[in-house]
Amino acid sequence: MTAAETERDGVRAIEAGAVPARFARGWHCLGLSERFKDGRPHTVDAFGAKLVVFRSSDGRLNVLDAYCRHMGGDLSRGTVKGDEIACPFHDWRWGGDGRCRKIPYARRVPLRARTSAWTTLEQDGMLFVWNDPEGNPPPPGVTIPRIEGATRDDWTDWVWHETLVAANCREVMDNVVDMAHFFYVHYSFPTYFKNVFEGHVATQIMKGLSRPDARPPAKEGRPGMLGNTSVAAYHGPSFMIDDLTYHYEGMDIDCVLINCHYPVDADSFVLQSGIIVQRNERLGSAGADEMAVRLGDFILKGFEQDVEIWKNKARVDNPLLCEEDGPVYQLRRWYEQFYVDAADVTPEMVERFEFELDTTRPVEAWKKEVEENLARRAAARGGPS
Image 1 (cartoon, rainbow, N blue to C red):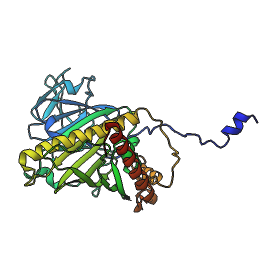
Image 2 (cartoon, one colour):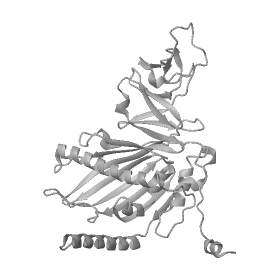
Image 3 (cartoon, rainbow, N blue to C red):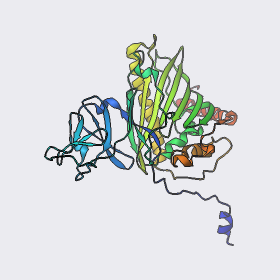
Image 4 (cartoon, rainbow, N blue to C red):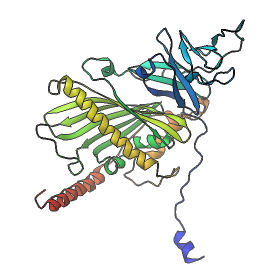
């Protein structure tokens, strides 16, 4: 054995299998429903296919496969006519249930003239579609919880962003258990971190402090941020609701943050974020709207930081973990339930699992790093920190 071979002996090899050929079973948010209600058909590339979204005259939002089963015309380039979407090629009219309702030039509609229709849900200003490779409807207990603030006047409207990411969906899911990246990528300072997985829900509970070495000081007249408390839960494979409170000097600001995605294909997904802010006496109505925009931009920058990591990293099926890393393997076991047939979901994928990370060592190390950063900044300015 050569010296080079000896030095390499015991090196952990990165294992990375092929990405799943199927797409996750569950509810997926396509975005704010209002964008689809202008009377025109809309194209959505998702689940390895092209879809068309249109609003029929009864007010319902419908989602069909975009390619007409007649001669392949693109329905998303067609016209909404009453309750149907009309193909631009031969004017075949397709209803929201996937049935061809009319062919203007034909004596009758073929009995088997059907296309794929997707189960939809419009809730709290968002449009969802149900995906199941086995073709089954959503089970009664698999739902998206209502967001009370989304329908109340004392909360702002949604501030919404979306971006296309050239990576597999699993990359975004790993963040559920990854406390350390919040410090190094997002310049946050977690002090408490816990995960709970049960059934189709995966929850992350996190508390943190503000980073004075990474954030500019508050402008004159504005309160400084002290930290935040977050209870974020994925309801299924792609839709996260985060009850998020930012703690400022003299007040708290309550928000609901949405972090969701839908797959375009095996190697790309559309990442979306939305936020609403509760109005309070100190913020006022206009102040809450301004805060929602500011926080929305802030969250967007965080996602951009994630995307920069994802597009340059390797896919790793066997991550090498240290004691202070979160339960990555347990999360991936939970996540697997959405990629296998319903009959193949094992108890280990859905049984309750709790893990509270010991933050003693991370907080100690990060506090020292923050102090050192502040000292260097002060030295560069020639004054005290």
